[in-house]
Image (tube, rainbow, N blue to C red; front, side):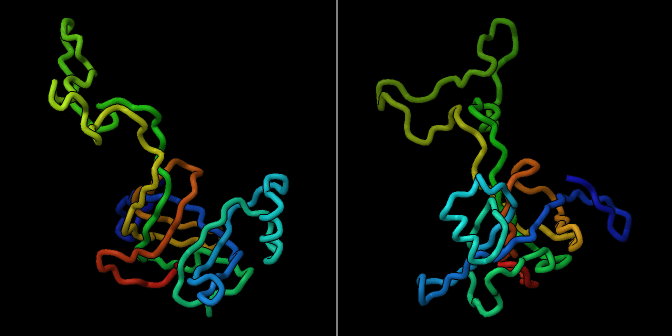
Length: 207
């Protein structure tokens, strides 16, 4: 994350995202696959890390060895061509986007960290500083109901931050400057789509 100063000199918290260039590696049509979609690849990797089926798949487009392949549903394939590049030029300044990614993993976490429970008394004789306390009824039902908020694995799940505003598009360095924060830690993979919910007007961009 960083900060960006607008025309009025106000500091805006932003996230710098390296978005592409991505290469179109496959086109799926309703005649052959039952639906229409575009598969794009991102991130160069070493040859020995790509298996033979993926090498043959990527050889059809003449692209390099790509690390990530993702598929996106589209309405019409007329504007897409196998082997073309998808860049940040598909987005515009001021456009609203939805950004999806895996949230930061926090491992096995306790009650306070995972659910925001309050702690117990911190006096010396308390002996109940961060313990959960009572977790269920006694003889009846004699068990804990499913879904009880308890300690466990926290984070590392897919999260979508909606309706983020694009502050700037840098086509030379393939950068998107997005207002606010996005899921995941630096270096993680993100999916960026035009916002389609809450009645937000579309201004174009990658589908």
